[in-house]
Amino acid sequence: MTRTIQTTYRYRLNPTVAQEILLNQFAGARRFVWNWALDRKKTHYQQTGGTLGFAALSAELTALKQQPGTAWLREMDSQSLQQALRDLDSAYQHFFRRIKRGEKRKGFPRFKSRKTDTPRFRIPQRVELHAESVSVPKIGMIRAVVHRPLEGVTKGATFKREPSGHWFVSLVTEQQAAPRTERPVQTHVGIDVGLKSLAVYSTGETIANPRWYRTQRRKLRRAQQALSRKVRGSHNRDKARVVVARLHQKIRNQRNDFLHKLSTDLVRHYDLVSIEDLSIRGLAKTKLATSVLDAGWGMFRSMLEYKADRNDTHVVAIGRFFASSKMCGTCGWIHELTLAVREWDCLNPACGVHHDRDVNAARNIDREGKRLFDLRVAAGHAET
Ligand SMILES: [Zn+2]
Image (cartoon, rainbow, N blue to C red; front, side, top):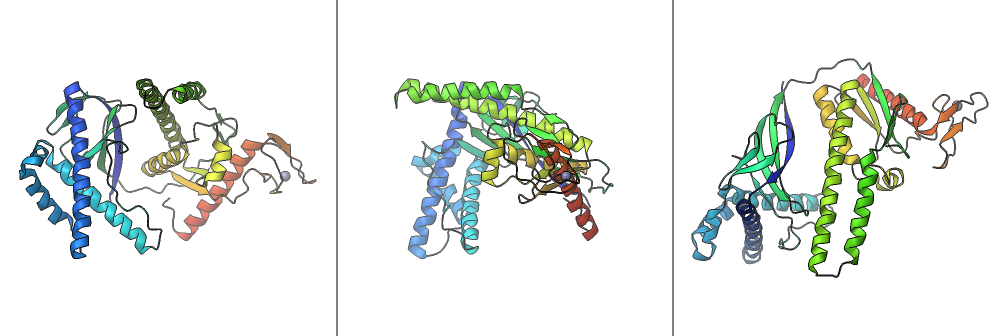
């Protein structure tokens, strides 16, 4: 049985002035159709108590395009307008699923305002990547920074304008892959998210925070201070806001590149990678505050998991109640350690082993991960 693997590729666009106007118009048309359809659904519900579905709305949209006031919609890509209706539909379904599950009554689809909505639109088909450009229906060839080639069949494209003012396209591709092969786990590693460094492996290897991170953060802080001093509503404030947004974007791009390399490296070298489950906000705050993983832990974890899946590597996340840093890896004795303690000696009189805090934690994570993995294999569920 083959598997379908989905991948998202994101490329920066360099549109001409005329193309940028069109991109903004497409995004405006999406917002217009969304708001119009939301209004139609609400009115229909008030009048009849029933729902106005995708097919009915789609027919109404076709009629709308024939009216003189809204004939400009005909100049937009029709599939992208249909996609706006589909997006609204799934927003509705998402909301009602939450209600069914008894969750809070929030998240009902809202009208999108020009001021707060990120300009974006989706085209489900016919967007193609070339060596140095992307071809877009009704717009043509837009120059793009193609930093990595695309694999698989393109299934859809999302165009988005970041706060920095730059346009990006995300292309989702699908490809068929051979089923996972189960190979015996021979090499395994545990990763502790470090306090001073980025991460420490159970092998003793330390991954330092990249040097650019500190520099960029300093620049960002300065830019944010400059922004706060600018008069509200002034032209200078707008300019300062763009500077801040561009720095954020630069840091995000560099972080992603870095985490891509790190995760690729891990799945190439190990059959099993054990990590901490840091999804709990409080823990993440204390541990990651100054690390490049600060905002990127979730991303790192998902990169690691999807790459592991392709490489027949396994990833195990250790629950947050596992005392990885407080337990002596040699004898299992639990200690009370403050965050300031970097190295310590085991207090068990029969043990007394000297530990580096992070390496000991990483080793405990490695051992616990291997134990959980073996349990799963024994139970017949190895596929994680
Ligand atoms: Zn001990």
